Length: 568
Image (cartoon, rainbow, N blue to C red; front, side):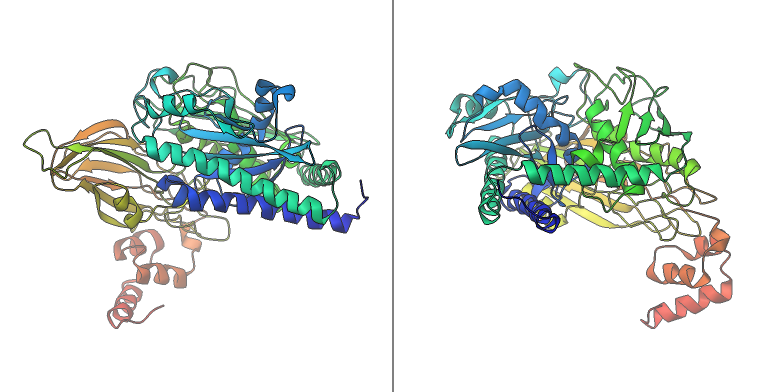
């Protein structure tokens, strides 16, 4: 093999990141599910022959990619090295060896160059339906949550397993959509493989051993240097969330120990009877993410930069759910893991991490069908529509929280047009929620209002997947809490924050998603920023006066400016 300089290896490293980003974008362009095409709920990565992740795509979620970082080793073990061939494609949705629940399909493709195995490509995408009870928290075990696909071959030396595709089609509500997504996943891995071979030919590489050593050694060293520079101590943090029908508490002890950081979740709540439990692989993904963005955000994500972040949790705790626990909504607990870790880390390194935010995504799935209370029109049909939405993120030490922005997941809020195109659903309202961001020196991000119904002739079930109804985001260092989640029908009928609930023909569901919390004493916020928020409609005159002591004269001045159509 040709020897290469550090500069050449750095160029190759950057190229690999570009390769997997193209891999991810190919999936976005070809996927059938709106959750992939519009929200970017996916991951893509390239691995060495040992199954160690070398590079991940920028597009995607921490829960997917950091969980997928461990998945390829499971594929190698299950398939067997002697059974890995050119043209193979492997598949699974195993929650414990994939990315945490049955609604994620992970596919792995071995990459061969000149007849020799040189690495693997992997990708994951959330799919709208996998059968069972549907995407929601109602199941009492994983067996009720949908079709389980063990790690197996989707294609053997280029030949697709048609028996597997028939089984999948026979068990899901949206067969064309799901099979289309599976082929999109396989195709994006193939795109990554082609670009990798182009790079290997350009740099005269017969294998990836040299570049793998360069990437992993430099990433490990850089990450450990950041950890070593921190105070060598520990601190406790916790957070309480709504749970399904009882509160759930995450407790964590974050310990900085020389060349590693350990997050120990001993003391956290035990398993819930419903499907909000979180496998360890997913909790680990978000615990690692929280610490990595706090201390080493610019170091590329790979096996070595993740390795110094360790996680421990008692078996069958809420963050280490074992089979056959129901785990369909594992993201709800998993998305709160960073806030729990930040609550501890803030005691070790003050002034670095944000206040609490909305946490989990504000997703809901609508299962539409022809009305049953009266004759349905001929055009009425069954359909599954999943929409991704978010509340506000927590205020940062030097910046306001982001409005209606998903943190920590990073997925995008889906546009109304894409949601309505997916089925006979109507989004009557979608707008920012004034006064929902917690007051502070820096303000929490705003949540949003949504109102959803069905087209004429349809009734529907809504799968609510919300939290922060009873436990809004808490402020940091004097900041105020964000606004809580609310959900009800348009006639005032109360609804639960989680679970499948029936909505009769003609009724709508009215939702308000939570705001992020504030950071620092609100009295320290710049008057000009308060005026700007008032002018933009982020806060009301009442909030400006009550939380920020804005004078009536200043309020009148802002209102006059807005009335004239000017800006601040």
